[in-house]
Amino acid sequence: MNALHPLRLVQPGTVNEAVAALVENPEARLVAGGTDLLVNMRRGVQQPNLLVDASGIPEIKQLTLNADEVTIGAGVTIATLANDALIASRYRALAEAARTIAGPSHRKVGTVGGNLCLDTRCIYYNQSEWWRQANSYCLKNRGETCHVAPNGNRCHAAFSGDLAPALLVLRAEIDIAGPNGVRRIPLSEFYAEDGKAHLTLQPAEVVVKVRLPTNQITSSYQKVRVRGAIDYPLAGVAVALSRSGPDIAQLRIALTGTNSRPFLLAGTDAFERRPLDDQMLKEIDRRVQQQVQPMRTTLMSANYRRLAAAGIARRLTTALFNALEVA
Ligand SMILES: Cc1cc2nc3c(=O)[nH]c(=O)nc-3n(C[C@H](O)[C@H](O)[C@H](O)COP(=O)(O)OP(=O)(O)OC[C@H]3O[C@@H](n4cnc5c(N)ncnc54)[C@H](O)[C@@H]3O)c2cc1C
Ligand code: SF4
Image 1 (cartoon, helix red, strand yellow):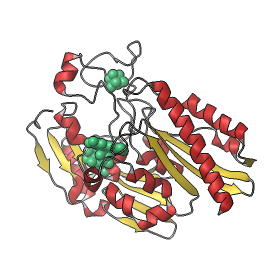
Image 2 (spheres, protein in one colour):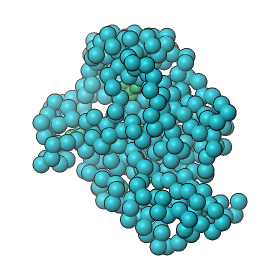
Image 3 (cartoon, protein in one colour):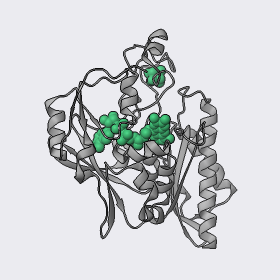
């Protein structure tokens, strides 16, 4: 990796000041924990001339329980989320996802906002400058061709953040501050299926907080990765489920690591008001395999990631359904 290029750093004390700094300098980037951005900068894939450091903004560091929602500031660290008793008891999938992110030192400084805004990943992109130059740059950075799908004109780099699928099944919304004030959107509208432009964040916008309704159903998250102790998801799945007697009452499944965006599996309402049986598990498997789009962006084969995603979805759905039966 290269040394960091020369740059300036500003340290705003409020979200408004951060937005103003980003408006003033369109080349600037917000940095939170820096565990993703600084690595990319040292690889030369991102080279902002100014960093706007969000670590000194108290208003985005709160984790608060209100009457009907929990709000999690974008600056809350992954370690805080992983160790919080309220999160573990009400939002199990979120706590489980947080505990699988990177290693202890990354979790200590890495943040919720940084995790949701994580850059997409690909073996042709997450490489040193000299490697990418030697192998001719690709469409996502400086090149003209995608080495994964050379006949297409889009980047298929995969979104590999662990929190997003958990938050999607928990029906999260996010507050985003920008030059025109604050807007609130469902998290599902935050992402687009394009590895080069996977966030719907507008210039100078900052994620401020995540909102989670307090009325929740049981949920869980699992992922497969190359190194069990520290690694991004090759495929990650969150499931939220409730029962009504022998039937499924509600079922939501969300995925990460397989597409350029994390997404809620479409069509799970067809499984509601039906008992969980082998036929339904086959249908869940089929829907997952149809909707995931893993490409050759990791050393692990795309088909393995497809099968793993379907397998985890079946396994988690079964486990949550059975656990509610004995509860
Ligand atoms: C070895 C290693 C292993 C890792 N493993 C995992 C893993 O298993 N799972 C996983 O999910 N991640 C993993 N990561 C990535 C990273 O550590 C985490 O995703 C972390 O949560 C990122 O948060 P951060 O605050 O450090 O982000 P930063 O690096 O500070 O920022 C990341 C991006 O988000 C933007 N950003 C940050 N905050 C905001 C905000 N409030 N509003 C708008 N934009 C914002 C930044 O501009 C930047 O583009 C790993 C990283 C490393 C180095
Ligand atoms: S998917 Fe293609 S364009 Fe995107 S990072 Fe990989 S090689 Fe580059």
